[in-house]
Length: 153
Image (cartoon, rainbow, N blue to C red; front, side, top):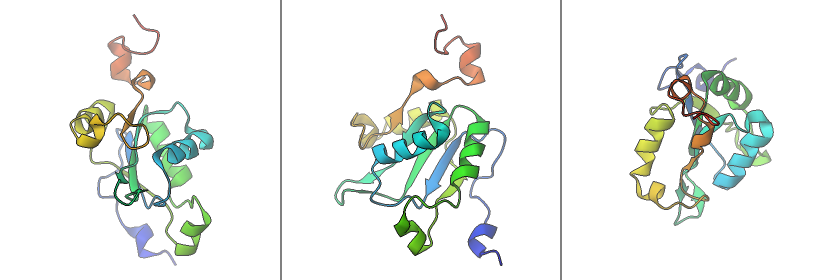
């Protein structure tokens, strides 16, 4: 029997334009850098140009969700296949709360950059707590057409 959780529709529908995902139910003890390492070691190194795992600074833990912008829809889709329903640790499995991957409301590197650079968190420039932007990894068709890709110009 399929649980109701699996029958729910994504708040934002998946499309061929989906490049930014929201990762829900991230274990609270995961730091942004540990989350980054987890993603990189599972085959996604160099395939995304933005990552943010918001933290509750008073409690010293993440808030349970994060965002990743992939350089292409195929990588976002592969990430969903790999991580949706996955458990990052034993505690997640015991609680029965696997990761959930959904399209984010804000899509694309530029839109996320503009959205987060205006926040207090985005202005701190602390890799442990601030959104991480890797603009040199932007190999989107638009960037390639404008000659902004690495090694261009």
